[in-house]
Amino acid sequence: MIVLIFVLLFTVCVATKIYFKLITGWCKSQTCLKGKTALVTGPTSGIGYHTALDFAKRGARVILGCLNQTEGEWTRSRIIGETGNENVEVKLIDLNSFDSIRAFAKEINDTEERLDILVNNAGVIGFGNRRTKDDCLYVMQVNYFGPFLLTHLLIELLKKSKGSRIVNVSSLVAATVYDLDLTKLNTYPGLDHKLYARSKFCVQLFTIELAKKLRSTDITTYSVHPGIVRTNLFENVYGLGKIIILLGLFFFKTSEEGAQTTIHCAVCKGIEKLSGEHFVDCNKVSPYKSTTNLELSRKLWKVTTEIVQLKSEEIRL
Ligand SMILES: NC(=O)c1ccc[n+]([C@@H]2O[C@H](COP(=O)([O-])OP(=O)(O)OC[C@H]3O[C@@H](n4cnc5c(N)ncnc54)[C@H](OP(=O)(O)O)[C@@H]3O)[C@@H](O)[C@H]2O)c1
Ligand SMILES: *[C@@H]1O[C@H](CO)[C@@H](O)[C@H](O)[C@H]1NC(C)=O
Ligand SMILES: *[C@@H]1O[C@H](CO)[C@@H](O)[C@H](O)[C@H]1NC(C)=O
Ligand SMILES: *[C@@H]1O[C@H](CO)[C@@H](O)[C@H](O)[C@H]1NC(C)=O
Image (tube, rainbow, N blue to C red; front, side):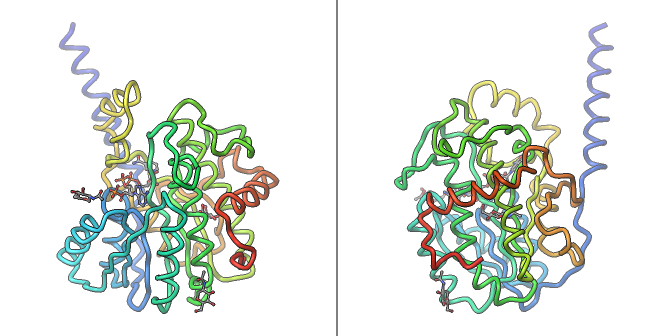
């Protein structure tokens, strides 16, 4: 009996895994990125690494926006080793600090001639009520406020390059947020996964609003859910969440698979008319119901502008 149950369970698991492998989207675009510049935040591991690696393979100049110099240099040599493309640059950015983001953006803006692709990939989960020196919740700042500020500061450079794109790595968990209290963006909701979901929800509303504001330009923007991917992201998850993750690891995507939708949105030709949309497995999906509140995304935009202390002359949208 026990053997039978075991065999049955095993079969179900393998069948599920095969099913997941079959529905995994792969970017089939052959777009060459020679002469183009791409910036990826959080490229030292996981999804970000495979995104940066792919851009390097396509011949792009790749800027690695890293938190840690040592890890950045190590990532750079790995990418050069695998692709032979030496046009890979390490620049330091800590999304945890508005000053750091400003310094980073200034350097890019002053030294780079163009920027064709910006991938807001870096993200964190866990960390509870930890706050930054800018007095924001750590997870909100790294996942949402930071990319919001960075995107604004780089808009001009993106505008200079024809047909540039902004890709935000969001998450399906955004769909679990129903009410967003704009006066409590930086108030800890008591549970780490709720905070994470809130930050990703904001990213998605931001994308929608950004796409609207960019309509008069030829910059396009996309948000993606990479799937559930085996990465370091879950290092700071403890308790029940950790157990669920450990049990689920077998079913998770590899980082290379997880990077496909980001790559698709960054390079695939002909998707420009889908600017502002959400993508899963390299396909456009319907927006999560909760993210279709245009009034909310407009208000969130305004509140965020104040939180990141964006000056009026810096808003070039
Ligand atoms: N894995 C999943 O199942 C999943 C599902 C949905 C969405 N996502 C999203 O996918 C994105 C990539 O995550 P991943 O799974 O590839 O995780 P990961 O392997 O942990 O990569 C996260 C990257 O972000 C960087 N980072 C962390 N804090 C930072 C900060 N303050 N400033 C700058 N960079 C910072 C990390 O740098 P260090 O290594 O130096 O700390 C690392 O390079 C995230 O936005 C995540 O929310 C992942
Ligand atoms: C950077 O990464 C290296 C290698 O993982 C580690 O030894 C070092 O402590 C890190 N530096 C900081 C400032 O976190
Ligand atoms: C970026 O550089 C341009 C000049 O090339 C300058 O006009 C603009 O103010 C700079 N933007 C930022 C955010 O530094
Ligand atoms: C990407 O994120 C930035 C910052 O959070 C936001 O302004 C922009 O609207 C987002 N774009 C998409 C397509 O989600």
